[in-house]
Image (cartoon, rainbow, N blue to C red; front, side, top):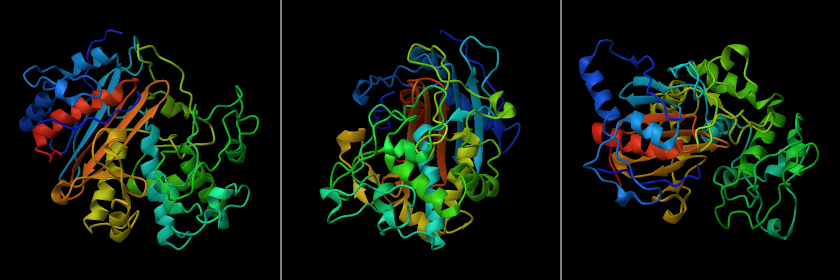
Length: 406
């Protein structure tokens, strides 16, 4: 059994095992299951799943060393909650602190899934309309009018589905050293922000183009409408209600959180200071644990099943995870649809949602869940090649849990 590859541009070490969180302590069957997964990874060449040799199995530690990834943390959902969670390796290459289930990683673009749920929470409450021109909500900055916006407008639905027409921007959100640009300065590309300004490059709704600017606009919309920073909105709307006590959108981290931070590492396994933007955070600024992200995933699963409406209603959850459009399989290496802030695929009991994340210089996140099966996983790493390792872990998980495979 193999999982399809999603191509994401993404020191010798001894594997350390962090503490295991499991629903049943002392469960020897569960321990055996975890061991099978840890010892059943199959290597492949990036972009070529057929290069995998199923007869050759590797340990997780071997693949971490192969990809020069110092630390990995995993949380697995099965049934009514988190079946197990475990940390491997170190927070920093060459350091003494091990990765545990409480270690904090960058969620990178997986942040977009959480922000999408937040804005849909307020759509339900009548604060926003998915199909209204977002300039009706924005005050301090407006989507630039052009020939592209003469007939079609940028709406919240188009922002959530990357059909706004906004540029990416290439090179990310840069800034003058030590500066804290305002969100409007980021969108305008004005000092102390040094990134290119947000501009419309094609008619809204005419095609798909993955853009971080889409979620910066959503952040501004939320903050202006609700009158407080996105970090506070997320805490009130998601983190506190769902018990996500190790999650934040504020960086640098507080001293208590900083002691648990997994620092990013480049493709050669060298540590680097995190380069998270201090104000533009909706596109990739979440710091959290796989356990916290698994709790968020469980809430979405329960909403889809009609069992909860703490964050969004079952109707909204199903709308969020329903494909608004189908994506070209060549874009991501597998057949996927674009939901409202989520990538979706499969059918029936095999329907799933996912969102990968990748922050420069080397932090990755992978979230995938099957709502009807009530199963899923969150994998986070502090290495640049982490998404490739995540796909190998996913393949082992799919075999162990008999997940449907496209």
